[in-house]
Length: 174
Image (cartoon, rainbow, N blue to C red; front, side, top):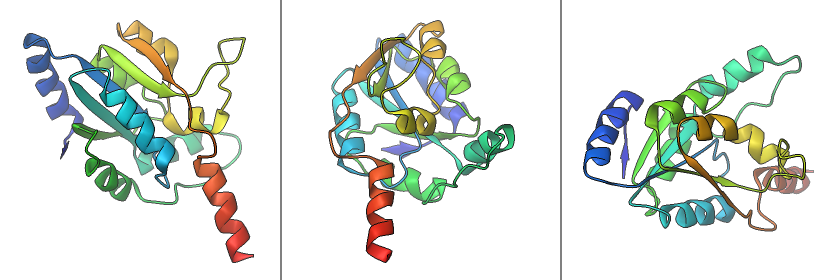
């Protein structure tokens, strides 16, 4: 697995496309990595030839916070540490960080065949059943589709979430 710049990744993507490689992309904060994250990435990896993971950087949260009327909690783990941990998962082929509040620009530049996302949309098709996961991923269905990617929803693992881990930590320290 390699941690690469977005520029290097996009150049590599051109070669993959010429060679007919099917690229799968997953994005998120991946803060407090848990089995749900790992299973999502393993499932996503099985959908194509290469799994590229876009991790929200600390600057991404700062940009989102600046645009928000209420301050957002910072990530627990710094972006470089989250990237290093993910880089060591067997399912991940390439990893990069993105600084924007959403993954829209990154997905558009990468132009993967598939964007894998955890969770399911509610009946109005605009709201996630798991709002925390949607916000932390910086994910945008329409951006993925406009780049030509197919969006595949991977069901969330029951009982696993960063919010649940944070609650557990609060109770331990109380």
